[in-house]
Length: 175
Length: 175
DNA sequence: ATAATCATGTAATCAGTTACATGATTTT
DNA sequence: AAAATCATGTAACTGATTACATGATTAT
Image 1: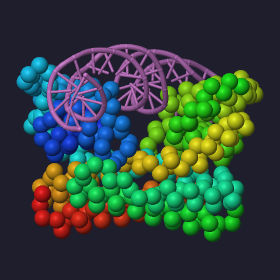
Image 2: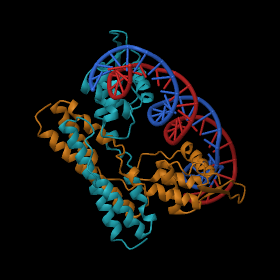
Image 3: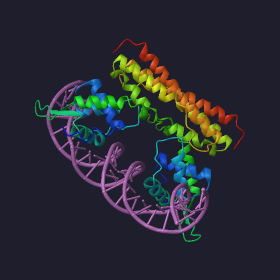
Image 4: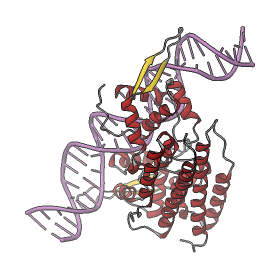
């Protein structure tokens, strides 16, 4: 009931966790963790050291309810989003300011500095990157059409940005 | 001289810091920090609490040389990339595996869960996002043409991915 | 029976954040 | 003279990481 945190914005992982809970319904922390593990985004490892403390944080803030489901001998915790959690999730989800911020992309970071290489090295690096970016995308798990559309769109957007920058690098007389 | 770290891969911030050093030449930690602060990527805050420890880490690993430049009374440290640092930076820069990994993008994370909203809410959210994404990009600092090309390319790639996903959401009968 | 998977967690560590703290130099 | 900027750092905290540790249940 302590809403100490409800004024603070949810972090990205918290938001994503709450949204996942809303999506798949009540589940164990373990199931939540597996979701993160198999998600196409490789940014979060979905480690126990991240998930279990996260769940406790959300529970302490009254955003999820954790009820013990001790059928049989095995302890098992079922998580469910509370009303406050649903509200917080929606706030997170529709936070346009947060959404429009540029995140972090290792490709972008490197493209920024590619000019440090000699023209020959640049060509080699660009070729290697192109190969890596064109590699067939692994289907990460049983996904929905929507997830696949998003994933494909993102991959091809990155490729497009890459090609634009590559073209610019190629027809620029050396720095 | 201790190369304890040379086998470990450089983190993204370490790589970016070394690359920045290579780009602008010897400078103070403060100048390095200002670079991060004014960079168009908003992922790193470029705080003193990040930069000064980082610099010490790199110095301890023999990747940068920090020489005291006590002209006058004010203590001032000049950082310079060592040969080992240059090599490490190149290794980081041409690490195709790292570069091709998807990073983290708050827009992508949210697009993943937009299906949780009602159709009406979705339309509203998409409109708000579109507005935010179409907002004129602030010129973040005196940049080079290359930085601007990259920035523009990235922004429009994100917009393209967004529109693709938005179109898919719009002509999908509700979930 | 054995192996895989489900399920829970903790400990040490790491790399960042914000806020605090100080003071010199340069510009207005 | 005052304000802005240059310049250095520390402290408390946060939220991740990997590795460790345990044990029940289910599938082969």
